[in-house]
Length: 221
Image 1 (cartoon, helix red, strand yellow):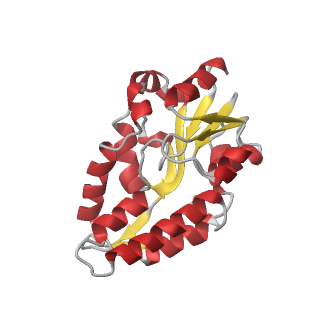
Image 2: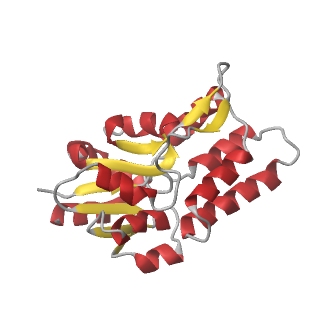
């Protein structure tokens, strides 16, 4: 039986970092847009390469953003168009095995669920954070009940799924490697189609520059 495939979302399923892209939308028209965007992207990179804990990465980026549900709708439209090209090329095989595909991410259900469901992955197979919202549709920040906003939260989330059999974790960030490092996955594939982060590649059991290489490992498991 094929292994369970645990995928990251940003820079893995899609070629974008969702919060960075949301920032680009939310900051439209502001005179300091480029400066704030550069700061947010720097924080994203620090969280992905392990030099900044994921809880600090999330909280610092959210503190720099003010956005509403309409902006999230625009983000979702962009993400649908930004599915990683090699994943899109093998979408049918992913759909056929979707019962053993999981998305574990420090991103947010609000925009991840509709994107992965369009790829055939049910939202019940998504482990992510949630936002709080005001009555008029403005974000109030991280929902404190979120379980993927703290260090080493991805391994805990994967263990909580109770998966039986081999587990392959795939992603571009150090938090994805932590799944295997903590024993919640049997191997970790660094996915480098969008970005190759040297500290992540150095930790990986395998490196995949495109999705067919991930599928070969999945079939062979």
